[in-house]
Amino acid sequence: QVQLVESGGGSVQAGGSLRLSCVASGVTANVYAMAWYRQAPGKQRELVGTILTDDTTTYQDSLKGRFTISRDTRDHTKNTIDLQMNSLKVEDTAVYYCNAKKITGDYWGQGTQVTVSS
Picture 1 (cartoon, helix red, strand yellow):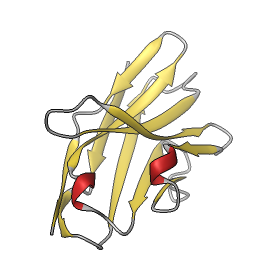
Picture 2: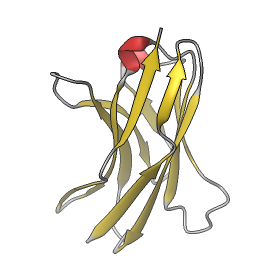
Picture 3: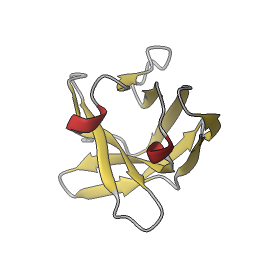
Picture 4: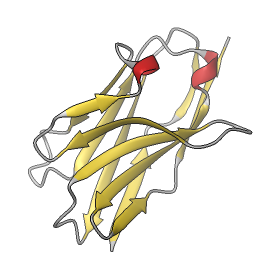
């Protein structure tokens, strides 16, 4: 089992920034990627971006340039990832979920709310 705990959500005005963090614990061996997803009210959950074990990142095309996923270098276990969100828009309002991927399946955090107001 992998446990994921997100933090850093909150409310911000349009144009502002937020940084989310996700700490993975438990049986993290064989996690080949971690990711951030988001789910806005009334919409399906969508992929924000992914970071592989070699720190290669990919992003949803529409978020490139505003969102950045990185691994927290202060965590020597490499089990903490961050999501830096800049130039936030009202449409970025959603619950943001951390995800860890193993060949055997995916693990999810409980989510953290991000609210962007105009």
